[in-house]
Image: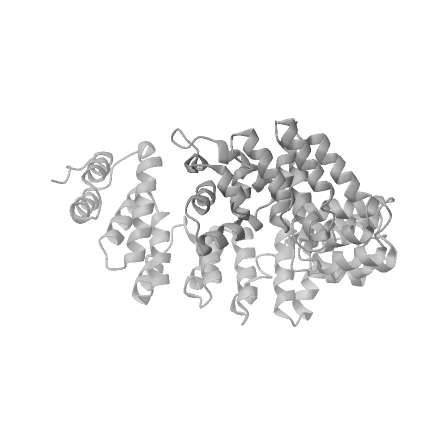
Length: 475
């Protein structure tokens, strides 16, 4: 970024300047401070800003990018002049650049920057200044000036704080909300609305927690409303902070089937405390639920609860029309069944039309002793996905089967499969070859030697693989 900024000064062009300004406008508070540090850090002996012949004409031109670059110069007199120029430049980017100089080590520069910020009280400028000062207050230099400006804004017009709490930089929003809360400016309805649908899940959770203060329990009306929040963290928090008289069995039953594992976990804790074992509720949902999402959640809940009904309860859902349900059933069986049952139920899903279902089945079957017919059927399918699944299974079937499979794929016609196999083979060569004990059998050794001779590998890689395998080094 420093080099791009320097280029915009030494060789100005409208397109380059527009790009630089857009990138500056997108910087976070810590990003501004990092840019300021990097501007004076030597790059191969010098900073890109050292290429600027003279800063006087740059500042006189009134170009904002030039002013910002000058404010990060190593020369304190140039920075002081840049601060005076930036004080008269409108816009949030100029305001953010001024906020950076509050932490300057030259008193004349930092005091001039602090004085310039005092007049920038509009919401637009404040939205750019606050994130930089929040980052600067963690540093020794500029801490007092940053704290003073933040305190003045926090005590200023309520409309400014309300604007600063609007969607955007998270640190700025959280600070503004805390300032509003300290002044009692946040109504319960406002907090509930933000907790329901705020685009930032961290802010939404903060609002839910603020509603529960000071007693740690949510008010009944707002609490029940938050059970329908779009943010899973808010729903989980609500499930744990509603009174027993508010969180009825009917409401808990819905939370047991929530799409979020965190919400289901809290719901099971509350259900055990109020109603006992949640297993029967999940099994009843499998029989009564009509929406695929609820069926999948019931299967996931049984799995998370280590219920004894699994894997038998999940097996019928492996043929469900919904991929989400099939995936949840495969996951439950993979976690709870023995090796024979896993192979019996999940091997057919390697051909599933849903990539996610097939990937879930693959994750649980590889490493087991699969029948040869499984790999034969995958090879016969001839699709890119079936070839990738077959390769993955072979890579988990022993060291020399892995090497043989990778070399076969590298010599094959599927470019993407060859690249995946090559990456796996080189990873083995770097991390696993040294701990590979034993050599391949005579027939497999001959096949590996033949494949090595034509594989797209370097001569050194061929020699290393041949040495580990105990076969003659390819010529």
